[in-house]
Amino acid sequence: MDSFIVISLIKVVVVFAVLLTTLAYLQWVERKVIAHIQVRPGPYRVGPHGLLQPLADVIKLITKEDLVPPYVNKPLYLAAPFLAITMALLSISVIPFGPVIQVAGYQTAMQLTDLNIGVLFVLAVSSMGVYGIALAGWSSNNKYALLGGLRSSAQMISYELPLSLTIAAPLLISNTLSLRELVEKQAGGIWHWNVLHGPFPQIFSFLIFLIAGFAETNRVPFDLPEAENELVAGFHTEYSSMKFASFFMAEYANMITVSCMATLLFLGGWVAPWPAQYGSSLVPVAIFALAGVVALYHGMHPARRRDRTSLPVFGIIFLIIAAVFLLPIVQSWLLPLFWFCAKTGSILFLYMWIRGTLPRFRYDQLMGFTWKFLFPAAVLNLLVTGLLVALVS
Amino acid sequence: MDVILFLIFAIIAVVCAINVVVQTHPISSAISLVGVMASLAVLYLLLGAEFLAAAQVIVYAGAIMVLFVFVIMLLNAGAETKKGQSSMALFLGGPLLVALLMLLAWFVQQLFPGISVHFGGFRGGSAQDVGRALFTTYLLPFEVTSILILIAILGAIVLARKEMD
Image (cartoon, rainbow over all chains, first blue to last red; front, side):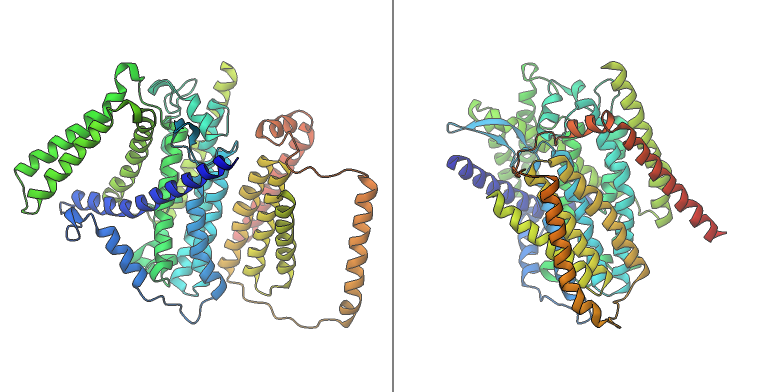
C-alpha cells in the first residue's frame, strides 16, 4: 500500500513536469513550424535556435503586472482561468502512455490511473472546460469578450455532438470504455488499429474526430472565439499576466488531450505499426540516426554563423538518443513511449500545419458545417458501424 | 475515508443548493447549480456507480447547464432586486422546513428499514450493466421516454417556427 502511494506520487510529479515542459515547448515548436511554412527562421535569439524562448516567455508572463479591471464580476473573473487550466490538465491523468512495466522490482502501468470509464472521464472533464471560457467572456464585462465567450460556448456545444458520436463508433468495435483495454484490443499491427480495423474501418470517424477536435480547442480554422481582427482577443481580452497565460496553457493542454485521444481511440496508442520481429524496434534508431547525420552535415556547411557549433551538438545528441534505443534494458518502456509520442506528435504537427495553411471560417459557415454536414455524417458512420458490428459478432 | 468524503461533498451540495436560491444574479445561481450537479456526481462515484457519475457530469453539468449559462449570457439578464418579502415567510418558513425534513426522514426510515449504506459496495454500475438494464428490464419506459423527448423537440421547433413567420 505504501509503495503504491510513493509510486503514484512519483508518477504524478513526472507526468506533470513533462506535461508542463511540453506545453512550453509546444509553443516554440509551433512558432518554428509556422515560421518555416512562411519561409522565415522563427525564434532565433534566445539560446541556440531560440530553444530558451519558452523560458523567456514564462519569465515575461510571470513578471508582468496583473491588472484586474474595476468593472469585472470579481469572483467569476478570478475563477475562470483557474477553471480552464484545471480542467485542461486534469484529463492527462487517465491517458495511458505505455504498457505495464517493471521498474526496480515494482510493477506499474505507464499511466496515472486506469479508470474503467476513462473515455467518459475525458469527455466529462473537457465538457466542464467550456465554463472557463464562457465565464471569462461574461465576467469581463466587455462586449468583445462577451461575444468571444458566446461564440466559444455555441461552438463547443455544437461540435461536442459529432465528437461524442465519433468516439462511440470505435468503442463499439473495441467494446470497452477503459483507455488501456482500448489500446490492448488494437495490438498486433497497423491493420488492427481502429482506423483500419474491420468490420468497418473508422477512417471517417477519425477525420470527423480531428475536425471536431480542432473546433473544440478553438484552433484555426475554427478560432472564431478569439478572432483578433473582429474581437480584439475574444474571451481573454481583459486578462493579463499569468491569468492570460493559463488560458493559453489550457488551449495547448486541450490540443495535447485531443491528440492523445485520437491516438488512443484510432491509432492504436503505444502499439508499433508492425510487430517487433519484423524490425519495428529499429525505426526510432533509424529516425534519430538520420536526424543526427543530417544535423552533422548541415553543421559542416552552416547557413548561419551560429549554426557552426549548435548543429553538430544537436547531431551528436540525436546519435546518442539513437544509441539509447538499442539498449535492451530501456527498450521495454522506451519503444511504446516513442510510438505514443510519435503518433501524438504527428497529430499536433497537423494542427500547426493547418494553422499555417487554412484561413478562418465565417461564423455561419462554422455552424452550418457542423450541423448540416459533420453531425449527419457522424450519425451515419455510427449507424453503419453498429450494424456491421452486430452482424459480424 | 469514504464517510469523510461523503460528508464534504454532501455539505458542498447542500450549500450550493441553498446558494442557487439565495443568489440574486442568474449566472451565480446557474454556477451554484453546476456545483450541486458535480458534487452529486462525486456521491454517485463514492457509492460505486461510476457510469452514472460520468453521465451526470457530461449530461447535466456539461451540456444542460452550459446551455443555461449560454442563454443567460445571450439575454444578458441582470441581477434581480429583492422586494416585497412577506413577514409570514420569515415566521413560518423555518418551522415548516424542519417539519418537511423530519417528514422526509420518517418516510425514508419507513420505506427502507434497516438498510445501511455501503460505500463502493454497489455492483452493477458499469456501462455494460446500465446498458443491459435499459434495453431489457426497463425497455418500455426507456422507449417511451425517448418518444417523449422527441415530442418535446418537435414542440420546440413548432413554437419557434410560429415566432419566425
